[in-house]
Length: 196
Image 1 (cartoon, rainbow, N blue to C red):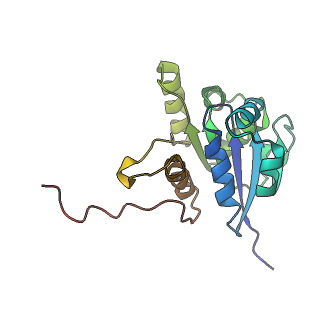
Image 2 (cartoon, rainbow, N blue to C red):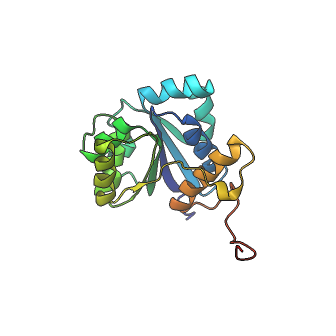
């Protein structure tokens, strides 16, 4: 018997930064051992269209299955759907709040709830600034439940030369957290000499 591919779920929600979700799907589409599923919230589709002129036709070639966020009976809504990890890229504050409070009102938040209850990896690319106290408390709550809050913060020590370099470095961190091999961004090797 051939081994089953590793199944991963990517959700795109309505925060600015739809490019993070798209780049993550593009990177995963090149990994033969990964079966990628995707789900996009209603606000996520609005952001994809506004920021990238992207729609379902853009995402479908990159994934095994593009799920409807309103289809609460889809596979990722159940713990028996063997999905090893999920990333929400980007993760809006509305989605973060719903996950923090167990409000499974669409497939994005239900799938995230499944990841938490099954003790599987859940990575949230929370995208907002500045942050108020409720944002911070929701980040604390999901962290206490086992999720990883991974805001897309530029790593300037890598000396990015373009917006693509900045996006790739943030997506590379998510791929590392999902335990997916990649060559999307350079890795820090340390300074050659100690600073004077």
